[in-house]
Amino acid sequence: MVKGIGPFCAKILVAAFGTEVFTVIEEQPERLKGLRGIGPKRIKKITSGWTDQRIIREIMVFLHGHGVSTSKSVRIYKKYGKDAVKIVKEDPYRLAKDIRGISFKSADTIAQNIGIEPTSPIRARAGVSFVLSEASSNQGHCCLRRNMLVSQACALLNIPASMISDAIDHEIEGGELIEDDFPKAESIYLPHLYNAEKNIGCNLTALSKSAPPWPHIDPQKAIPWVERKLNLTLAPSQREAVAAALKSKVMVITGGPGVGKTTIVKSILTILRAKGVNMMLCAPTGRQSVFLSPPAWKPKPFIVCWKWNTMQRGRQCSNAIGIICLQNK
Image (tube, rainbow, N blue to C red; front, side, top):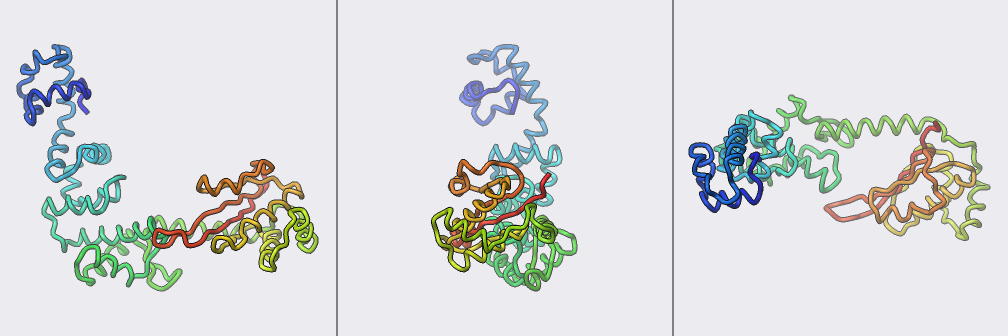
């Protein structure tokens, strides 16, 4: 952080002055003379760099005093600049929202160290947002019912349910949370997840209302042909899925492992390729990309197909295959 002080120089300074090293640099820089590898030019560079970092030093001292590591202190400074100490004192829970790598628990510890009460409304509001974030990250939920959110926040914060409910209302009024009746009454969202859900729904609806970008394909002829081509027999439900895909611009095939989703997609792609449709296949993980990477599938933006797993309580419970047919450009 200080110009002129690298790892080697830092070891020398700490070995010579211990915890007083910062005081020596600022008030008695002449004491640096004579240390191995530190000459007049290096001393000038160190003292100049230290002066430039005065604000950072004050922030570091404050944050270190409240249990914040050096690396996190640097990120806090880069985010908030000279206002870092003021912001941390006013609302340390902002750290969990704004800075990657600082969890709610870390922010909560800082809050307790600077004297914020466990029953503070700030803590309640931050806890509600954290519960929703965790539900999204760990369980794939875009929202929680109000009663579930209150219950989980109470367990996390160990404060009365009435305080949690008040915090939810406050955040909704301030636009920090959104309440909707979808998918069920009193569903509470973080705004970015609510907007993402809404935008995805609108885009999929718009796509689904138009015809696929290939000529009409007769499923009664195509399905028997692909069964012979792939030397397999599709189950009735698989036949229905293939037929639906051939006339749909948007489709999601879902089900547990081993129920035949991959066979359905392979059948669909084989039919479309025979009709001259160019395709783009993608997958969110390397393992799943294997099934989507036959050499014959050439990446051209006509049809996009992908595969993903759905998670519940941190474990894979089923997976799905999505197919979106894009406009030909």
